[in-house]
Amino acid sequence: MSELTLVIGNKNYSSRSLRPWIIMKHFGLQLQEICIPLYRPDSADKIQQYSPSGKVPVLIHNSQIVWYSLAICEYLVEVFPGQIIMHRCHMKNSKKCYGN
Image (tube, rainbow, N blue to C red; front, top):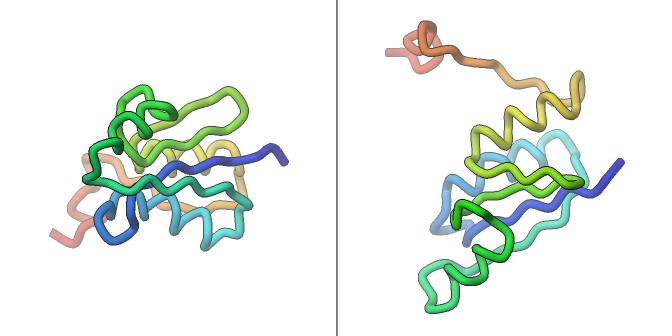
C-alpha cells in the first residue's frame, strides 16, 4: 500500500482535523501524521507547504492532494473500498442522518 500522509492542526484546537484522523485510526490505516501547531506566526507558511487551500486537514496520497475533512473521508472510502465503511448522507436525507 502506498503511503498516506495526513497534515493536521493541533488536536485540541482543530476538531476538523480529527475527523479524517479518527476514521484512519479506527480502520487501521497506516499513516504518516504531520501536526502543525496553529496560532503561531509561522503556522500559515507551514500549512501552505502541504495544502493548496492553506487549510488543514489535508491528505497526501501518491500524487493526490485532498483537503476538507469530509472530502478526505469520502476519498478514503473510494480508495479503500470494503475496508472503510461510512454512511453517505445526501442532502435529501439530512433529517435522517442528523436526527432533526
